[in-house]
Image (cartoon, rainbow, N blue to C red; front, top):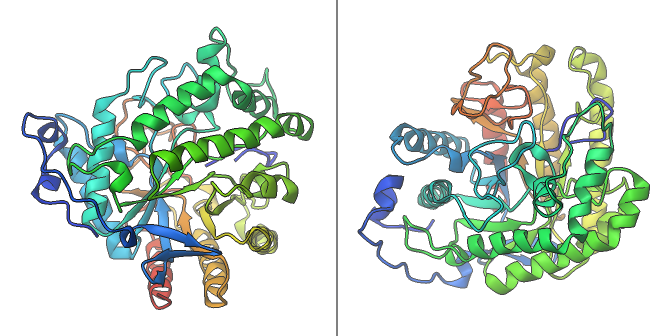
Amino acid sequence: MDSPTSNGLSRRHFVGAAAALTISGAAGSSAPVAAARPARAAFVRRAGERLMLGARRYRYVGTNMWYAAFLPSEGKPDGSDRLRRELDRLAALGVDNIRLLGSGELSPLTNSVRPAFRDRTAHYNQTLLRGLDLTLAEMGRRGMRAVLYLTNFWEWSGGMMTYRSWVNGGQYINNNDPAHPWPEFADVSSEFYAMPKAVAMYHAYVRSLVGRTNSVTGRRYADDPAIMAWQLANEPRPGGGTAVGERHMSAYRQWIDASARLIHRLDPNHLVSTGSEGTQGCLDSDACVIGAHRFASIDYLTAHIWPQNWSWADPKDLAGSWPTVERNTRAYFARQVALARQLGKPLVIEEFGFPRDGGSFDPSATTAWKDRFYALIHDLALADMRAGGPVAGTNFWAWGGEGRARHADHHFVNGDGSFMGDPPHEPQGWYSVLAGDSTEAEIRRASAAVRTLR
């Protein structure tokens, strides 16, 4: 998800009995039985504008659950239990694709989540990585597939600004700092692409994660059908302002292709995507999107749609602003489909979110307008699917499930533990779909409709 600003510029395979182990058990002395390498037909692949699974098109209704790997941790079986409960809830709704955080840099930035997957050294957090192992094992048991993003353009998981600070003597700026107004954060963060030492540190982590062997299943990540795709980053942009973005464009494109080719060399089984918002995150330029996704190393396009963040929706007057939301959403959706057709590649609408009624963050607030927005996105995707178009799937933002804010002001404090779909820089409850929300009925409807197309 992008960083919210008011100016609209921001934001089944069997794994054996070992899958039932807790994280601490998986780390013990008993080595898991080595898993046989699965047939290539078990992996989602690209064929022109289509995503395929075996001889059939792969289409899905999915979600974002950035915090999945954070739930299970050593000595805390309740987190592993919650993970399983949340996956069961999603499976019951027909959700079979989850986009989640596979990275996180220990950061000095305000609102950056801790713990992190890595620090500035070659030390990688094995507790979190074993949490990711268990998440993938449990997803595999349920026939689900993961999209893992490998860093973040934004500050909430460390990201590119943090990599940048690790090689420049510790210099950084915080997003939404009044002393550094928009688009300064995005402009500075995008300097990362042209910093060889920072990119090398990122690539070292990519090599380690893509080359990892799951401690629960004994299967290499590169051989795991529970993974659909690797994603270079969450919402990588060439810059914030047009002038800086154009100046950084060459380095941005080189980073995309070099990073994607590295992943394909390490792992020929899985897809690679950028994690882009689409034109909104690419200087509002079709040429920018085309240039960033024309590489053979990039398998499909992505798009994100954020009506409130982009100033289409007034949270205090959702009824009055709905015509603008619907008009702009239809236009933006069509624009991204046209770009996918131009490139001859599939498209996934992998982030979209809407506030609770009245702009409330309270779990008791109704979600009638959120439900309507979800139905709009799902119906646009279904129409394109039925017409044989490039849209392969949707991932709503985001599943909060049984998570609840720990504080009356809905702010996240590191150590809270009750993770929600909203990242730590956002009000907890803003965009989360909670267990029991009426939105569940819309998700169930859409997933059932997609299944009829398979």
